Image 1: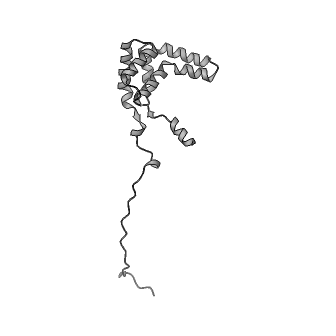
Image 2: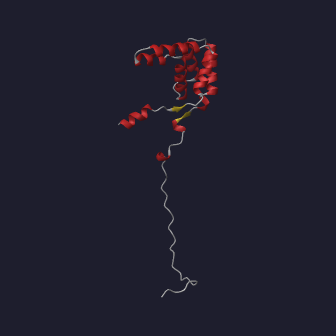
Length: 149
């Protein structure tokens, strides 16, 4: 039962390593860095883990990465992503579309779904094939050796 629960918690997609840097550059480009930094300062000053989690969920970078994940999992379309960015980050529609275009070109095309990945060696099923029978080896007299008496 514990194993099943653990499998549910595992991320279903793998982000490229550069994703964080790309999102950071997008935040800078569209003037969202200040909001991100203010949120991080609020996290540092907050007292409870619940409060920190809530602030973290509302950071622009977190919202963008969540939308990337949902789009990669085919839960939302690129158009929905653009609309949600506009609404959740409080930015103009034009900027939201530009952000989605950048995310699509720089992150989304590199994301791999778990189903598309190869299974680890322990989970790969090997088809059972029968080995060919070994030919019988008959003993021949060695003519080059002296007889043992």
